[in-house]
Length: 365
Image (cartoon, rainbow, N blue to C red; front, side, top):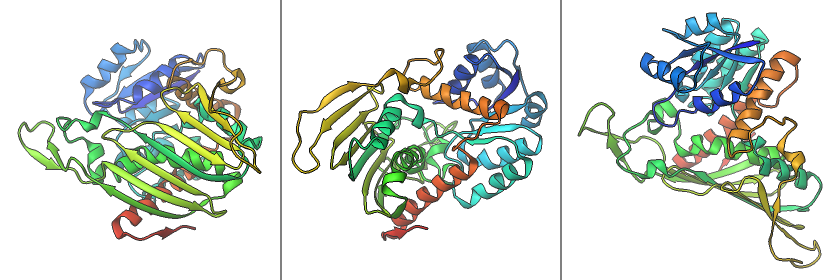
């Protein structure tokens, strides 16, 4: 039985809840400790999720003493310090994305992951969404032929409300980039995961971004406004080493969740509101489109091997992220979602931010 600690419960979104629900489905894991900078929030999570074996810890060191592994669900700027402390204390680590505000910040955690030989995973779990699993299968089978271009959009609606107060994710010092990092980390990871074999790595990026709600009320200071210091919306285009064009939009003030891949053999479209199906339109590689778009259910083989995996949007991919983390710890399996992967994705985000800051196209690697 692996003893798990949860560090950071969150004040608004509370991504820790997704981790907790997934751990509770795994018979070989038990949550024994919860820590948040506000003890009342930690206790609230223990009560809400009925964590009968868990205690509230007064600091992260106490968590490390009570656990074999930890999920780090805190603001981005704290990830590396907490990950390094956990690794030094002998714990395995699953760290939420984005890894850190800058790529350089990630180096210390990557170093200690290698030194300690502990499992150190980054939480890029969207690749386990069944629609993306099926998309990967079709691409690898050649269903879209040569990929011409890709269009992807992700985001959320909650922060579109100007009454939402000034959160850490709106402050560059605590978050790094805003929508670009929050949603772009998943977007970059998914495209690279699906298409690197056929399209190569991203080699150029050009980005533009804006703050649409430039100030918000400071939490705990009624009527006092503070500046938003990172982006509400980012739009960036990329070219891969084989010439494929990617177009991305990340928005925290209102956006869809979709990915469209267009190639010589047709189009594949994923809609986040319908994660268990794809829209497929076939094309003759030497001619035009041969059929109308067809909605195709994801086959059962793309739901993963575990019957206990929840068949609910987002819950299923968080389950497989946690299941992978536990299996890498216990069964010595390998994972692509290493801290090195987290740093690589941060390098792509940083290149996009540099382009937005300078107005110039940035070349990579």
